Length: 300
Ligand SMILES: Cc1cc2nc3c(=O)[nH]c(=O)nc-3n(C[C@H](O)[C@H](O)[C@H](O)COP(=O)(O)OP(=O)(O)OC[C@H]3O[C@@H](n4cnc5c(N)ncnc54)[C@H](O)[C@@H]3O)c2cc1C
Image (cartoon, rainbow, N blue to C red; front, top):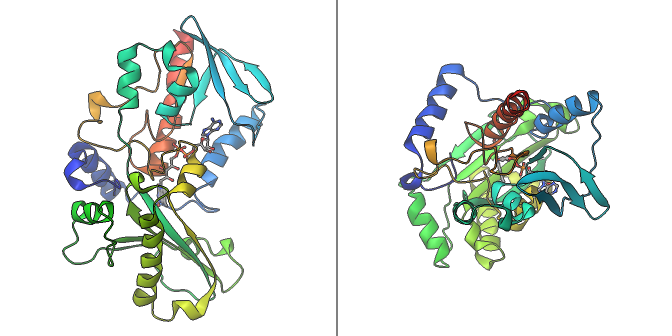
């Protein structure tokens, strides 16, 4: 669930997440796709007079005398007394200049460990392969630590655990009538980015799917395979991790990252800091908590 080995996972966070899910029956799929969650925040921003600039990455967060001054892109400098960064905590510290932080803090952030990544195969199909929105396939006796060690040693496991989402089950309007999407992924450690092993793993996933869903090949309109570089490009963190910082036993509770960085006016938001839960739920929870934190800091 955390896309890290169980032996490294935070028991407390796992129990918290699992018990909330069971108690609230709160797993869900937002109509329009997971992207609707950040888009709903952006809609609120624009509704209140905010302006959205896409395709213009921040190259530097400008800090002077321990206070944030604004951000720089290739098009210019945007002055601001508050900067909220979703670029991942490590990237955020680097964008703000590690020299602007206490060396111990900068070292600690640079040493934080990421969750594992994933290779994916996305199928566009002319039939409905399953009635389940989410399916999990775990081979009998599967031990993630062994699977991971085998991959890192260059031996490609032939029967990986698979996580599958069929968004068109919940949201048929995502595809033309009668067509369906099935998104499948297998976890792969980020250390395998740019490696042949990750590419070969996506071939294994594709073959295994044709065994688990006999006939899927004949019903495939198109398919799209991605490796770790795709995730790294989408998130912009450069790591290729699936979730963000690993929810490890030594990165939870008092050891988790504070979303208010030790530079006045600089905040981290997203899955790395300030939220509870997993993945998009954790990132959205962070957005709401960081908003409250900024309002509280502004009033103090
Ligand atoms: C294959 C796969 C399957 C997953 N399945 C699920 C699932 O079923 N359920 C679930 O809840 N989660 C799932 N996740 C995890 C989930 O996608 C992430 O945890 C979540 O997207 C993290 O949100 P975020 O806002 O913190 O970061 P991101 O979604 O990575 O967003 C970071 C944003 O910051 C932008 N950015 C980065 N650097 C800069 C810069 N310098 N300037 C400007 N912008 C910048 C990026 O462009 C990006 O838009 C999955 C992830 C993967 C890879």
